[in-house]
Image (cartoon, rainbow over all chains, first blue to last red; front, side, top):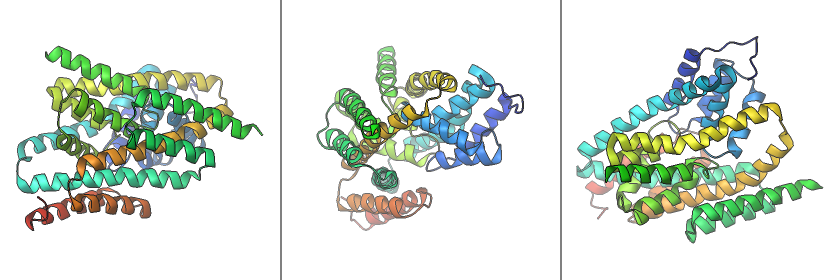
Amino acid sequence: MGDDPEQQVSRTQLFLGFLKIGMLGFGGVAPWARHVIVIERRWLTDKEYAALLGIGQVLPGPNTMNAAIMIGDRFRGVTGALVAVVGMMAMPLVILVTLASLYASFGQMPDVQAAIAAAASAAAGLVIGTAIKMAVKLKPTRLALLFGAVAFVAIGLLRLPLLPTVIVLMALSILGAAWERRA
Amino acid sequence: MKEGLLLQLALSFAALSLVSIGGANVVVPEIHRQVVEQFAWMDNTTFSNLFAIAQAAPGPNVLLVSLIGWHVAGVAGLAVATIAILLPSGVLAFAAGRLVARWADTRWIAIAKAGLVPVAVGLILASGIVMARAADHDALGVMITAATATFVLLSDRNPLWALATAMVIGIGGARLGLLA
């Protein structure tokens, strides 16, 4: 793909760049991904990165992971994409296994149990807060608000099965968005 | 038995991979339903503890799935679950990257985004509520959830601060006998 003669990014550089993004991504990868890719390494311009992230957002999977795959492929093909994914996941997996092993060893201590239980409550709040923040930033149209609310009620409160519900809702929502923009 | 377990992990998470538009947090309610209710691999408390650990670690939210794999079937489970949640969506992203580079039609991507993002946000909110129900066993838990949500909403600081503060409050609360 787009073998831009002006820019050569090696597999090692891809690996190290995404290793850094994964490692720094405490509390969310997205801000660090932009910093490393656009500002520090200058692999892409802000506009190119935003476009890739936008495509990553409409596809299943974490959008930063999808962007990493597309960036890796762009510079080094299939192996570039693989190197980017492995780089991004390596450190988080090591840290995760360490945390999980510590939890397995010390999870029975009352203080640890209390701390983890509180962290679980906080983690739920973190997700709720993030969702509300995204909704505010989105400045949704009435139709978007409706689809968001229906998705929330159907899955969060009624606990309808996710797969069929999401497929139907997403299809209708895209049709709605197309209709809204038709004029 | 173990092979069956690994196969079940692979099938469950590979299917969820393809609908996780908006990231792994979108499919948390379904992961919870399958892991706790359908297959009974763990109880509610363990699930919410793993969720908390995954949130505390750096990296993409798919780590929850890696951790579930680890809990259910050790290192092999971790590997199978991680690959299962990443591979289908990854292949799709790879293909889409190549297609879009050729026939970039930003108008249709903009429309798809306008349709998909609101649904994803609604689903993430649903995940938060499902997790809160699993995690909050008392008034202190509910207060911590509400306080953290407010913190994230009003401040751009790293959310790890909120997690750390909550842990301190949780230990203090337990020592003072506020938690059952």
